[in-house]
Amino acid sequence: MTESELPTSIQFLLIAIQLVALGVFLYFVIPLVKSEDWKAKFIDNKTARSILIVFILILSFVWGLGAFFDAFFPVEELK
Image 1: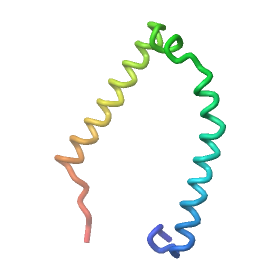
Image 2 (image 1 turned 45 degrees about the vertical axis):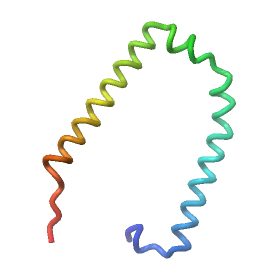
Image 3 (image 1 turned 90 degrees about the vertical axis):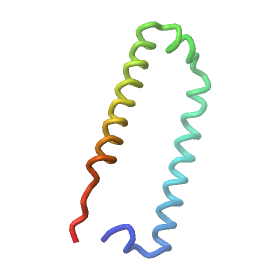
């Protein structure tokens, strides 16, 4: 059974459960995020800054590679 075969009420129930889970997650995480000194931990620390730069470069490379293959080698649907 795919998502499109589910009744509308169950689809809305699943969306509501996901939104409640997101709210609970944010309720617990936001105080932890606010209490950290992010500048001292990531920007002033040269090792952490280097790791963040490498992570961003890898993420952009993988995203660009995926965009390239999606543009030039699209998925063919068999009918």
